[in-house]
Length: 368
Ligand SMILES: *[C@@H]1O[C@H](CO)[C@@H](O)[C@H](O)[C@H]1NC(C)=O
Ligand SMILES: *[C@@H]1O[C@H](CO)[C@@H](O)[C@H](O)[C@H]1NC(C)=O
Figure 1 (cartoon, rainbow, N blue to C red):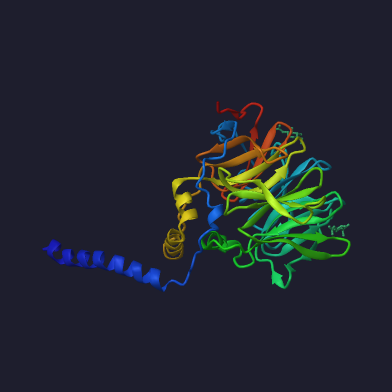
Figure 2: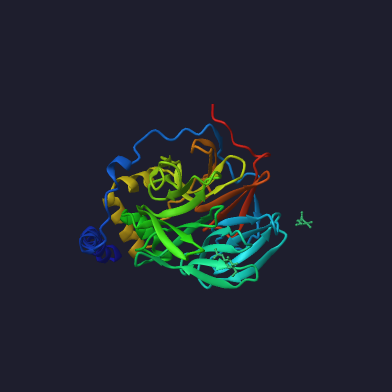
């Protein structure tokens, strides 16, 4: 009896499901784009001579439970403390061994990229507020929030050159912090690399049309600035001087994951955080706008599809040549990696702590 009532209902639902899905697909106006064809990444994986594929093994957690989603991490040699921006809108100060974790300044937005200025101030790329100057005493000044009549929607990474110029990114002028997934899925370049000159207070656009402009690092010789494009798994180089001044070329391409922040370690290496490694689903997403549309519909009506895994950090030399990769299948959304002494400190937007790994004790070893 029960079956005879249920069967038609089940049958009708099964028939309706594809019809509804197709309808949804047709009606949804979201229109992802093909990535630039020549930049599609159907290539051999990048060769990295040394690897540690169990980065979590031996890692310690600093500030566990008190730091919510610490995105970027910066070290101030003057105070001997780490600074990090969290989801709750606070910039925290953390001692190198994690014994001290304190709330320092509340930005009221979402502090992402951070860097120490030349006069003891902290420069913060706040996703919501724009580019901020936090002075030693904790007072906050908004430096800039727009360029060329386009307001920043997701101020993301920042670094400072020796002459005091601030280099920073707006990941997207279309999608904000909580919509970043849509930027990735849409596949159009709404990101910009910008500079701010503190003496003239001028904001300039250096590079437009970037595919989610993320981490920024000024080269130690000050001749160029690197900007990472998360969506296309690459970092490019914008020349600040010499005969190539103002031009852009590739710094490192075909990364084994999607890059987030990048930081120079003072010892010949840049560390690029990889928020997720490459996998078959990520590869499909990159290739086919249609699949990105389906994922977008699922995101909109069902919920987040978690595809992030195999995150970590890659070290590349001054010319962008990879030297070592640290990753772990259980790491997702690693957003920064900085090396201080023998330790690598990493922030993540999916973890309530800063991860610390002694890379002397747990090194990346030759991959033969
Ligand atoms: C952590 O470092 C501080 C100095 O910054 C030191 O006083 C303290 O003993 C250290 N704690 C541990 C558990 O190592
Ligand atoms: C940040 O503010 C401090 C204090 O007002 C000032 O000394 C410093 O020059 C400012 N930095 C920038 C980059 O504007």
